[in-house]
Image (cartoon, rainbow, N blue to C red; front, side):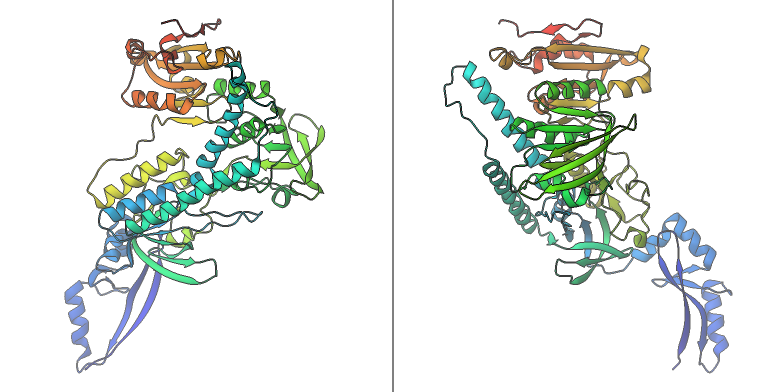
Length: 569
């Protein structure tokens, strides 16, 4: 019989690992020195602390620090430890759902935690993340609503006769769109259940590297542990930080479920969200003004962005350029009410004021990483934007914590990218796969009234990387056949490709402004993945009459634009 008294010291290293170190052992034995000699014989160490992890001797302080640096410490900490789950995904958006379902399909015990913090206006939504609830899906459906309005105007030129008093009902549209979204929310829950993924509607926060606290809407706390974690928390709209912004303004988080027609609307910002929302609101017949601080669609090809903006302006959208709001005040309450916006010029001391029914803020989005306890898990975050840096396998600086989607530093903020990254991550972790997500040449589309699709480099970026002398730009204006009979938007659609002359005129940028841009761009995205060249595009026979066949009519960039009209078969 003997008793041991252990004085333990907690050490916290860069990744917040907590190690108990045996600094002193006093044994009541008939011959206590025998125990000390036994320890010396076992470890060869006379000094303290003398660290053991899961029955494995590590050594003293220096040895433990080195084990942390080379990764062996994490392996020892994880070995033989029972966790509640193999994988916990924090965030129930498209990427998080895809990752968790794939992990479960590969036989792992997986959990998804998702919780929507209400907007300042009290708006919330169901499972599925931004894209499904307050992003891609409702945006495209409301864009389609506006497209149908234009089609009705065209219809008369094609012989359709109907009552001139055509009007739009916001409530009908909003209800139909939200009913569809509700069906998707339910479908996601059913899919998780069928895949044996445990879904918990609670806000997750790390309290230890392998342990989280989940708080549900009633404030009840539950704790879970996992061997691995995936961060898929996404982003939320950024506010302006001026008087009245959160009290009186809305964001895209509120717009798609707004119970009343927004009326005369000021859109603040020049992001794709700003132009898309401003575009479809104008298409519904509303008075829309877009306030722009600097340029349209930052990060996109500026030639294409300006063309999309010019088209919007020609179709009734007003632009206030080089202004920023400084104050929003309520003049009248109501649904909608009346607001006064005070703005200042970015080029002078000029102050302007305007009255609107609704003010929509669309100046960008912030990563949801600041309130999930990443400091307690040791995950490094960019303090300027909340973004997380990962390696080419979506692994953070903490080996057992991964991140996907919009919160990644320097990666695409697109739903299909998050889905692809999530699935491939799960397959690498649990299925023996080595395939990584390819973030190069990702096709995308901005659903402005005249849609803009792109893949690869903008002309500006290509010039920075390769130099103007090493690029060849081929382009053309064109007039879709569908537009000819109504006689609208002649030579407003535009397409161009950017080729690298040093690499056999390989296409490094594709840009298209016209109808059905997403459908057109998707095909070119496949071709660019395969390394298509200008010669191969020229050798491809087009489908006639389509907008996509404009690629067979692209000409070298000159000061004279060459118009493409559909030819007669």
